[in-house]
Length: 368
Image (cartoon, rainbow, N blue to C red; front, top):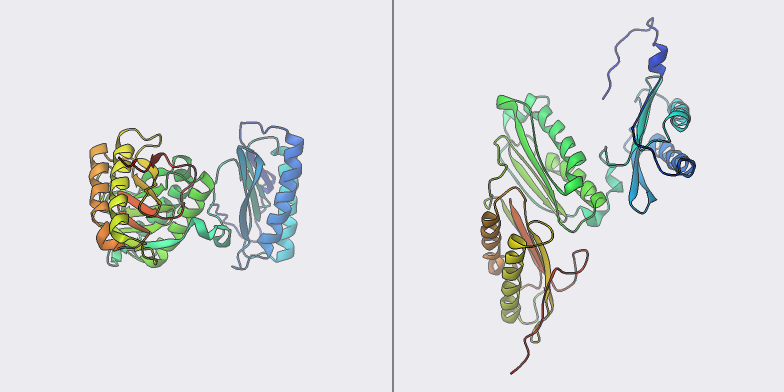
């Protein structure tokens, strides 16, 4: 953020009118990059001045190379006219192309009226409609009763807002992030956690949406957790890092029945048990495993299990066993479902729903 205080008679120092800062790293093929950056910011400027939310702000990303995504953002002061905003952003982009665009990122603050920036990692929450719906499908939430300590403007509320922004920025790099903000009675603890098979961009989108929704659905709560299809987010006034949580829970059964519920349930339990052992002991991704069962006498089953990575392995196994004990009560003969806990989750269905090949495949046993 930035704050400027003055009156009509004060002059703005020249060094503030055209301020820029750039990253140390160099961007490969800078001439090609500048052309792509111009195109991206031209689109951004149009989106800024036509933002349906009425704010002079927009952020987006583009693929520069196969392994390098560029995140770009532009913003104007709210008291500018659309014409003045565009003029300011045009000047800021021109300065960026001149002095910044050979690096892996940078910012330009222009006339203290507008701002443009880009980087190789996501540093802003995306506009709501930019979030792919399939990456952020809401499942459930669990909120503590409203508390006066988390009213808008309170120290706890300000710390929570800052914490959620930290989670959005940092969690996508590893798919998991714990953080805290504030001190004493206004301290808030948070955690963001993405499904082990999702890409960084999808993780970022999902956590950004979770951050918005948890504030909408749990206003003034001191403790809350939200589950989306590909991520979960939680915060509390108590430190929960490293502690297994099976008390926060949710269930989402599929609508369709399994063709043979009894056999389906038996095969599912065997698959979940195998995946739990794999996730806890030797999975390529810590506390995460996917698999499929190919029985001769029932439908093919796809399943996924996962735990947060800050709990011990035995607690991960116990959490998944606790979740699997709800299979009958949750799915009740359905051919798919999600069973969620604060520290772990499992999901299953008869169609592929996770990215990549399954880590574990259970083949049909030959007849003797």
